[in-house]
Length: 193
View 1: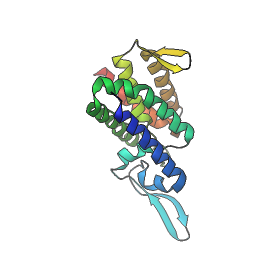
View 2: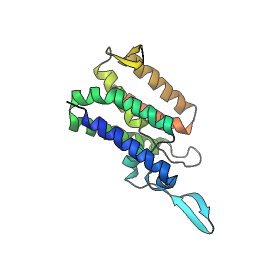
View 3: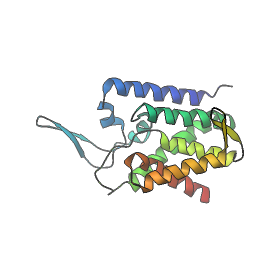
View 4: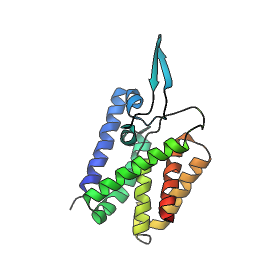
């Protein structure tokens, strides 16, 4: 019983990244998650290039990545936790949960990111991946998974390390880590209920 949703999500991430490499920054204008409002991102002669929030971006931003390392780290998390959770939850529930985490992280980014300096786009599946991490750590806290060749780590330890990393990135104000922090806050709230 292959984890088909996980496989298709991985394929979609690779295909979208390949398209990004071919098309350059053009997909970012329409498919990255932009804050509400109209944001000037460039000029071509007298023509203004603007970007702003559109509802479809709450899904599309999760398939864009900044570079190969960003893509590989998200694919690593997806392939580490996806099959485990998909087998446990079933295909439909897993797909729903993945996209729920992606959209919730995007909404958190929009709400928590207002007024924190010049507006910028958010990209990457990290919010969804942190949701998978939280679910795996909650369902299997003592289960040891391979992290690196020869290195196994329990779910709760892995969640603690990655959660602390996300929190540090968010607190230190790095734009690249802020979406991780937004997802960390959402996951923390979900665990308290």
